[in-house]
Length: 124
Image (cartoon, rainbow, N blue to C red; front, side):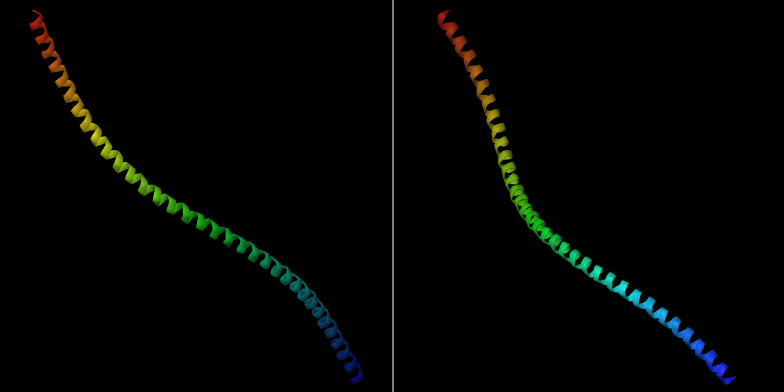
């Protein structure tokens, strides 16, 4: 009877060993899959890091170009203001000159009328 009990225990232990062995195989398979996934993710990470480096370089180039454009814009804005001031001054001078010209034309018309009147008196 003790032999039967030991046989029963041995059979139970064999079943447990088989289950444990099967679980170990599943864990090994899962481990292998995880290692493959890890390697794949490492490769993807390297590729993304390279892409990021390229994007950073493009960003640096774009920032440098933007800085140049901003500097050029500031220079052109100052030049525009200067030219606008010159134009305003010239427009003021033009208005003054036009006013003087109108006065001279009026004086010329008056003098022409007087001349014509005097010429008629002399002829008459």
